[in-house]
Length: 359
Ligand code: F0G
Image 1 (tube, rainbow, N blue to C red):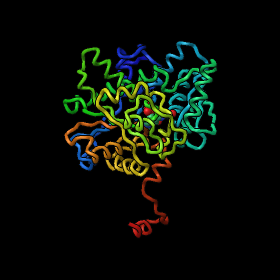
Image 2: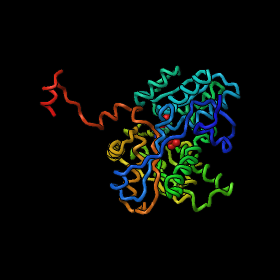
Image 3: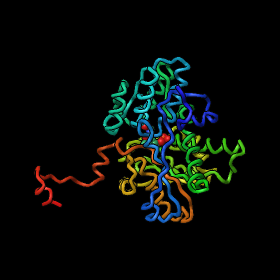
Image 4: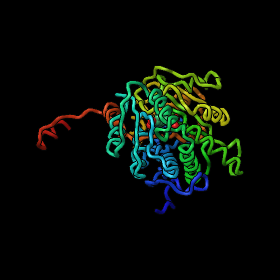
């Protein structure tokens, strides 16, 4: 297969392999969001919509690398714990590589679209009576015992692929505005993207392609009910305290133990970034605002815009900044949340007069 021109593999020189198990991931759009820009009061706001990847989330960028590595190692079972999107992507890329996939999901807490994907792509799905963090503990244990190859974001090859989000943001921003963004605002669960973006910037600095002061400020957003990373950033701690009880409408980031925090926290600090927690109501408001600008996302993704709005209101983000918000998953991932946030339907009889009556 030819990999040239696909989003992620265009950047093969920055990756540990020359080619992957590919379904043409990456190359996602960077949207302008005029209503949000005016509403929030920041000079330039753009949205990098990772929901436009093949399985509807950024995970594909990591899986195209990680599943290829597993293939080369000759492993016979791939596994992950997941709040949904990782399981959908692993099921898809595992199917493409013709390798068995096992996924552990927190029972009752995974959005419908994601379960449907994992199921149709043929993963073996286990529903665990516990949260995501408990699922990850178990899968890590299985990997230690040689039962499976782990493809959660603690696997460094995943993050290598996810670095290309940063490369695309820089390239697209430069092409469209003539500048690199001052800040990237992103939802945080396991802090994999935060760690991957920081690694991307560090490598550009090491290669002499970027000045250290030019690194966009990495700004993480969590839901109030699952905000251990925000707690660590705000209190200036070097370590993150694990939260045992987590809850949020943004089930993708319903995570109490961000496993990549040791790689991500230094990035937030070094780039002059910050972290903020937002309520479920603020997340749903931001999901509606994005939808009004034509961008359909799942709740976790809307956390980025909710965080931007909050930090701007608090004066932590300046009006003249150029900001990119990362939206990590597509609206259709969580159709129930979308329908609940949207408007109601009206029943009408099957004739034009009946329809005109309600207009
Ligand atoms: N947004 C979405 C839509 C996600 O699915 C995830 C993570 C995140 C944000 C958080 O990203 O871990 O890099 O900070 N989802 C994982 C999963 C946990 O299992 O699908 P992070």
